Length: 308
Ligand code: NAD
Ligand code: UDP
Image (cartoon, rainbow, N blue to C red; front, side, top):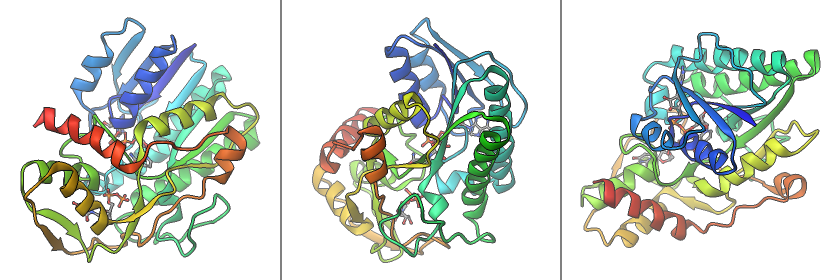
């Protein structure tokens, strides 16, 4: 099949393109290198079935493909808050441009949505039926509301034009090939620990996240794309909840680091809890994550150790 991956030079895009190439598909990746890397593209380009096109998804594009994975959008709060107007535009215009090709070529399109659509959730665990608690006015809204609007566009193309849309809500995902200056917690803590620098916990560290290893996510995304007659949304995440303090201690232990934990201000609207209910993914896709946190962290630490 011919498959288009927007955001193909980024962390998830890199692993997804690799997995699709392994299955023998032809993959076209679009990316503007906002947070993606040329190194990722160089590694993928070793496969003759891989084509890279430097392109900003806010401008229209048109490739005759069978499937589209729409990933283009910075995922780290540090990066998506740098140019918030661009973040909203990427989510909304990028989604429309991608949906227009899906409609034109009758291709399936999978949107990489996020647990952030639940905002600072008042319900835990979060089920797909929960409508969320998002501050439309805060610094995270460019991302959260952008992703919510992208979901709305998917459902409207589905109802209005019969476009074959699929929505996955991805919970915090980590693994090798994360960008070392990405700013997200796992890469920050691992790099700090390996350099014996202070570990920067924001707030008092009691907020929780549930961390999913990249390989589990990729298998869930591909299963979702291949599943007939199921638009979702479906949560893809690991239902092992851990506080940021515990994460810091685990990473210090696994790296045998001399680092000490230091505390910084908690960013505005930082969600207090995040825990996926993955029963829908289990039932519909026969999917569940099977990488334990320590196992995934060890692989990620090995990657960063070699990089630093
Ligand atoms: P990432 O920042 O590593 O990758 C995003 C990619 O999109 C980058 O390569 C970037 O250069 C590209 N991009 C950004 N704006 C673009 C534009 N206007 N035109 C073309 N390319 C553009 O992040 P990631 O972790 O790989 O996330 C990929 C997708 O998955 C994002 O849409 C993100 O919102 C979603 N997601 C990720 C997570 C996670 O934990 N990693 C969680 C929920 C949702
Ligand atoms: N965080 C932290 N130190 C860091 C980076 C992040 O304590 O150096 C916290 C952040 O405040 C949040 C959690 O870790 O509570 C996850 O942050 P991340 O940016 O990885 O993703 P988010 O889930 O907030 O989108």
